[in-house]
Length: 310
Image (cartoon, rainbow, N blue to C red; front, top):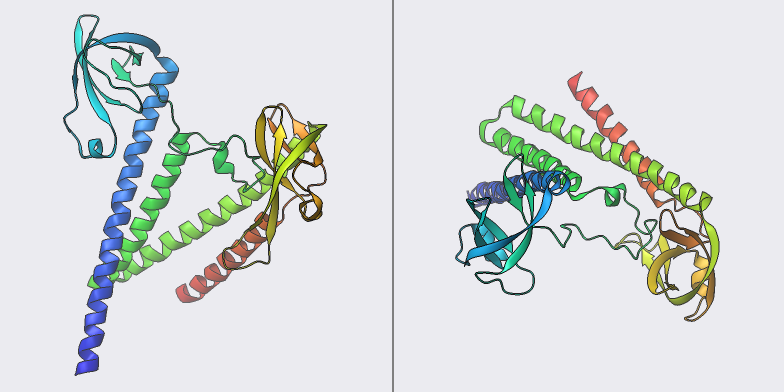
């Protein structure tokens, strides 16, 4: 009796935990969608609109949305072309008051104002070579990044939801749908890793082909493990002085061992890409290994599912 009761209790607790996780993932997917739609509107207005200066008639700092609690927000009331407007305005610095002049983007086609952004939703380190922790996503704008986040989170939500429905109802169609979603996510991951690896070697060759040799001063060196659980694979980096700017670039293991602060280092610098690397740096094979491993997993699961369907 007791073991059976504990087993049922554990099942209920596990279901509740999975339900909470599913709800959280669903909310994150919805937030990512809202951010993507907001970014789409901003890119349209900032590209096709014009910058105008308005004079505030009123500045209200009362909360009007749940999002207002996470930032310093003011609602600006103003008149433009004899028409009243109210705009949600994020204040990073300063303190707006009635009568202040503010520069805003205005799109005549949609009759919408937007605040110019002085920040990126996704941090991009412009001082770091793209070859360091290379990802093709770093080349994307914020709109594409939010869309990708929305797609991934929505897919995870559907996968978890199908598992909950299968547990509650026992429907085979829910389990089948879950398998299809899982396989779609797996194949999408394999496709991304394959594309990312191809783009890495393409970028490496492009940087090297259009570069000129320069000498820079080493400020420091760093060894990074590509896995938190394993020290088998390391990448090596150096912080160098290039003109008035400090840059983080990839180097080789032998250079890491011998280079000291203040030492000169020969690099390839591509002015068109505004990127550089050590002239001795060879392509990193970590991406290729991860891609081959992902293909192995995908083929293994596809074969397994094919046997179940037969």
